[in-house]
Amino acid sequence: MSPLSYEKALWKWMVEQMTELKDWLNSINLNKKNLIDEDSSVEKDYSPYIINRCLSGHFDVILLVNEMNLYSSLPKKMQYDFYINSVRKRKRFSPWMRKDEIDNINVIKKYYECSNERAKEIIKILNKEQVDFIKSKFEIGGKK
Image 1 (cartoon, one colour):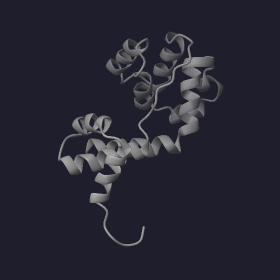
Image 2: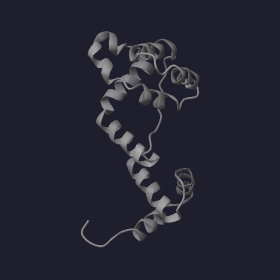
Image 3: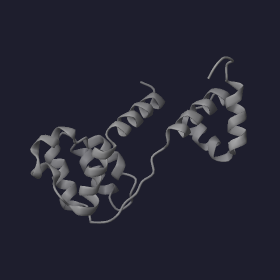
């Protein structure tokens, strides 16, 4: 699976699970309300990888996330309890890459024949008109 198709799959999963993910992150970061203790059936919905990825963007939690990556074989409840009891209460916001930005990166990669990292660097330099021009080069006639 290519990294970009993996990101698209991750994006699709995030859209489907948005309220769930928000609840997990709020319980870890803000209200410290243990969702698994309240209802043990939600444990199957907890995704350690996604939670680790969301938290890894914050400098004050990165070492805790690294610990969980080292012990990824621990049960989900144990990982969740670790975060509930270790992460300090604080509002944390991490922006995710939007779907249209992912599509733009695909076009940039195709146009310049470069890697994901290089396309992300290039897209920071280009303005909207330039990206639209590059997109127009790959449009095929017919109905939209």
